[in-house]
Image (cartoon, rainbow, N blue to C red; front, side):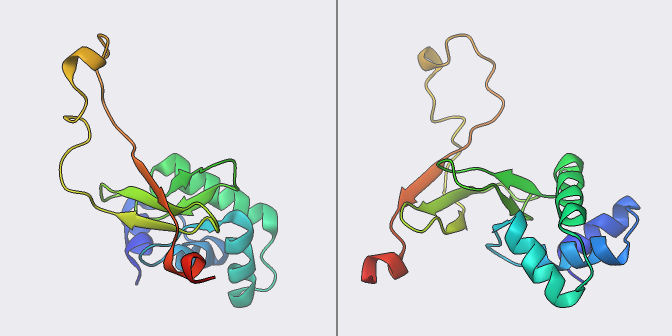
Length: 138
C-alpha cells in the first residue's frame, strides 16, 4: 500500500474506487502531476472516472493537507503528495519539470532579523530554478 493511501486510511477517509485510483496515481517520489495528467493516468486504471471527480478529489486532498498544490511561473497547478516531509522544489525553467530537494539549513533562520520588518515569520518556501539535463541536451 502506498504511503498516501496509508495516511488516508489512518485518517478514516472513505476510499471509494475513484479516490483510491487518484491516490495511487499520486504515489511515488518526485510526483508533480497536473490535474489533467492525474486524470489521464487514472483513466488508464479506471476508464469511467470523470475529470470532475479527479479535480474534486485533488481539492479534498489539498484541504486535508495530504497533498500540496504547487504553482510555478503561471503554469498549470501541480500536485505533490510529499506533504509530510519538509522540502523545497527545483524547477526546470524550460519544460517545467519539478523535483523535490532537501537543502541543508533552515530557510527561516536565513532571513536576518532586520529583514523581517516585525513579521512573526512562520514558514519559508524556496524554489530553485535551472535547466534540467534533458532540456540542456536538447
